Amino acid sequence: MSDIIDEIVDYASKKSKYAEARYIESEVNQFSMRDGSFQGGSSSRDMGYMIRVLNNSISIAYSDSQDFNEVKEVIDAAVESSMRPGKDKLNTESFGTAKWSVDARKKPADMSPEEKISVLKQMDSVMEETKCAVRMNHIIDAVTRTVYRNSNGSNIESESTRVAYFYMFGIMDGGNFEQSTGEYGSSSGYEYIESLNLQDIISDEAKVLRKAATAHRIEPGVMDVVVGPEISGIVAHESCGHPTEYDRIIGREGALAGESFLKVSNIPYKVGSEHVSVIDDPTVKGSFGYYMYDDEGVKARKRYLYHKGMTDEFILNRESAAILGKEPNGGGRSSGWDREPLARMSTTYIEPGDYTFDDLVSDIKNGVYIKSYTEWNIDDIRFNEKYVGKEAYRIRNGRIEEVVRRPIIETTTVKFYSSIDACGNDPKFFGGLCGKGDPEQGVPVWMGGPHVRLRGMYIK
Image 1 (cartoon, rainbow, N blue to C red):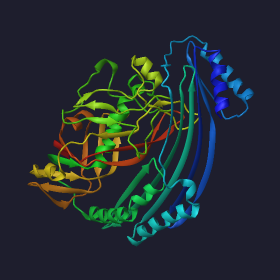
Image 2: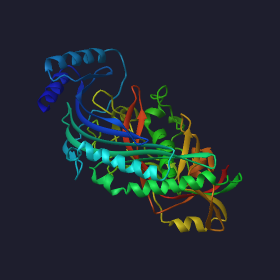
Image 3: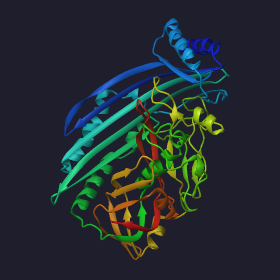
Image 4: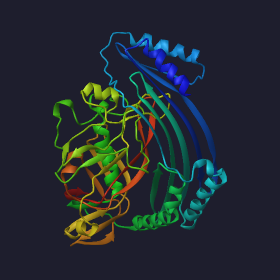
């Protein structure tokens, strides 16, 4: 592997101003159950090379061959393509030599397929006991090994392990249907799944849905709102993370995953109150989006996307960094060896504050607490958005009172962040696969934040 990738970079650099190569090898196992029936499982192994060269323009080639003579053919084709007239830019610096890995105590290889399936069976039994109308469980693990080299001396190697669990179930009560989904993921081994107390999570969610199904709807009006970490997390991801991916801002993703309400002409931009900052940090150990170097060999670091209500930094890969005239900041990610690295999120969250949950609630005379969501929507420039509550309660005179059904926040990104006057000290995170690009790439991410208080929101 290392010998071939060195040959690739050496050969391509003799024909180009700059050359780089990335080898990715992935082993993935996944198993599913639905309504008590095992739906099947799969194990796969995939490996190959991405080669990128820069001359007059950028050109990328892919190969899964271990025969260097065959790889040379795709390099030659990429070099020829890169000679066409163009003004492409690409950051070409070296970030040195490094090796990093994920600390996985209970590795996927240490768990038999039967042990993994038994987790699904246990959770399905819990759902059946709570009389759920629909029951789905899915478990997945992945081990990914990468080697990155470029013609300016970068040499980065890594091995990461990730595990994830997904569930969905529904409750029918009083003629009303409510459903719940949960996504949990970590860069670690199966010790993470064991730490989740999934039985309690699912049992508690079933109780929440039954109460929500028979609750009354709130009377529409302007009121104060406290939202839970599940909502602050999806807000951070969708209305901060995505619009600050610089390829969206310049329109490169416009026909694929959308653009951004942020434009080159209006940056810096006041997006919210001084009480809110949003961070994207790949270096949070154990997070589903964890990495120490990105898929372009760039050292990862914490990034303030919004800082005290203002745009601050953007998510950059090597290409967008060169366009902006900044150093890349570790945002280049791809889902596999045959996908180009795009500007992508990792662990995105609203920065915690100093308030306890009781502090946030006690100062509200007329309001609602929306702990979690059952539905969300946002437009393709990440500006107009909607969140429908799943577990929610009325707040009166600083006290949480009766359950209410599906309160709706329908607002804009600027209105949401501008309405925040306090952030809690209790961050929580949730896993997910974030889609982008064409062909579409799904990469693991974490999203989260603390409880957050918003003033004067219209709720219906």
